[in-house]
Length: 141
Image 1 (cartoon, rainbow, N blue to C red):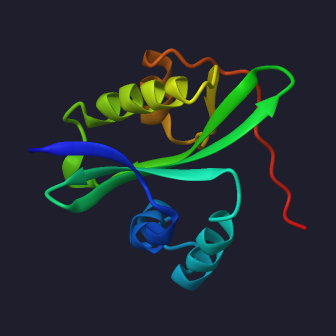
Image 2 (image 1 turned 60 degrees about the horizontal axis):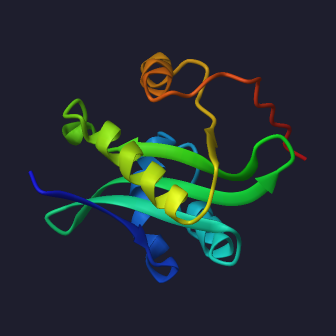
């Protein structure tokens, strides 16, 4: 298969809604996702995608900021690869591309959150050199 990686233009963010809907197992309505991505266009957000034969088969968000404990930092937000494209080394290739892209932009660290119950992702991120620094808490207001 012929995979490529790129940053999706903000004008095309609507095209990733179906993948993010699948990632969230339908728990967030597509209209809500569309609205949120529309807001994110004007924030420190970029969307990296995996393309196979002109089809988006993988996605992750990249949030850019400076943090007091890690300097210029990129937060990877919800990596998702369609099930039929998994277990082929594609995640590792995507992470290598993301690392190079972020480093080229002058960032010095990458961080991410992963769901507690997603044990396969924990092993993957350990193998990619990530370390657990703490817990991520969320409170809806």
